[in-house]
Amino acid sequence: MQYRIGYEALIQLLAEILRREGASASVAQQIAENCAACERDGSRSHGVFRMPGYASSIRSGWVDATAVPVVEDVGASFVRVDARRGFAQPALAAARHLLVSKTRANGAAILAIRNSHHFSALWPDIEPFAAEGFVALSVVNSFSVTVAHGGTKPVFGTNPIAFAAPVDGREPIVFDLATSALAHGDLQIAAQHGRELPPGSGVNRHGDPTVDPEAVLDGGALLTFGGHKGSAISLMIEILGAALTGGHFSFEVDWSDYPGAQTPWTGQFLLLIDPACGATVPLARRTAELVNKLASSGVTRLPGDRRHQNRREAASQGIVLSSDGLNTLRQLAGSDTTMRGWLESGMGAGITHWSST
Image (cartoon, rainbow, N blue to C red):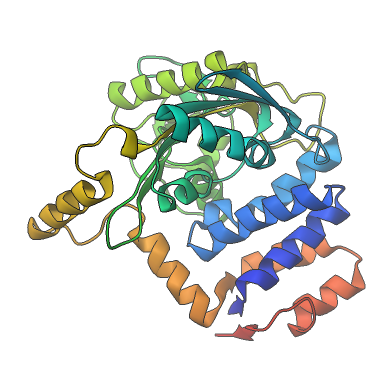
């Protein structure tokens, strides 16, 4: 059975759960908005599915969900943020105004976040910049679950990379992809539902290829996409996301003293470009020409299109929440009878689109 819930109602519900786990009101709101946006746009592996991991990391003391980021103006086009063991999204929000002002003044600017926990998709971080006319690129490293090409033991994380650019007459072009063969969340979901992995996704603890997600999780590792090509990009992300920012490499993440920790304590790199400073023809117009050419070549879907379609459907019909998702929220509600009442009845907390389908 599936259920539908309004976007704002889901944000309110997730924020309440996070506040009960010890997050400050502002952090809870930012993470809830991010998580609800992923669920709304169809990125199930980074939506409600992630909530137990957020809660567990907060409870364990591994992440400080009350941390106030420290923004450092260190150069004409360079902003650093110490997230102080908090989540990356509040760090980005704290630096946003300074980053944008430097980008407008100089044509481009870099944001380097360290001591941060990023546990979500990257597109919510950069899509808003493209909506304002900027070009944005961001990378994040993770915890070591991926074998480099030619290696035998995991060193890299899933190490996602995301890019966003404006387009005249339509939503921005946005892609967000792991440099591992698949995201770790998708690996966990496959194991949860007993589904085999695509060939070439991972190896078992002995280094042998496997399509069994449990074998990958039990001492095995993911592979990079595209063999040596994906491995090279993942290497670049370790350098930008950790070495440049001052964060931890994926292999340096050690949560052994924090039972229940799940969020990687690493770094994030973001490059923001103002195309108005360099383009002889507006970039959004030129990008539209490229999009039109792709359409005439037979391309029917561009990066980000499915997310926008899901978003439009959610706006009119509510967000589809699976039974698994509902059970996750029930478990997090615990003994809170008020919250459990909301979940059971669909009443209260602004839940206006709650119905079984």
